[in-house]
Length: 176
Image (cartoon, rainbow, N blue to C red; front, side):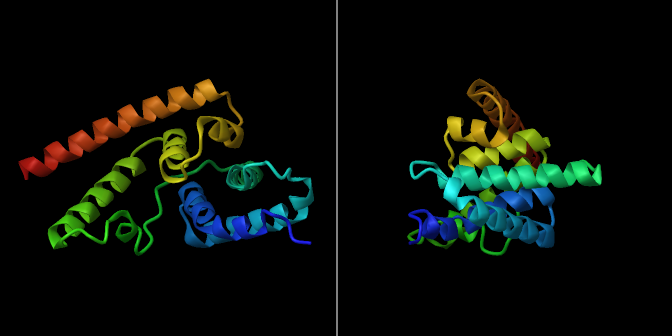
């Protein structure tokens, strides 16, 4: 009999891929990481409690695989950024907007992605998990294996840094 989580697992693939892309900065490696995550999740599905948060559980598995790969390769992440997939900016716009509104949304999304790319890895990761994946502080704490208080302080620090980078970008674009 299929588990209640089976269909939810399939629905989480976009979020897992985005997170994997942020961690690896490589499409092929991100795909491999998501595939390995699903292989391990399928093997461990019986141990998942029915009341568990599937998305947080999958993100935790993915992050642990990535960390294990880093340890194995003895390499740190060189640079990480939010994935620049085709259509990402399009999903951030509302269909009811006029042409100027759609263009401005795409420009804003590009500026936000570029600003996030300038953040250190730990701050990028926390922004992605909270703002893009919409995990709770407790769920993020579980994924990152740290206290919820650390999540809150890191997120506050990430938002301040992001605000600073975005305001600098805005000032530069108005000067031009």
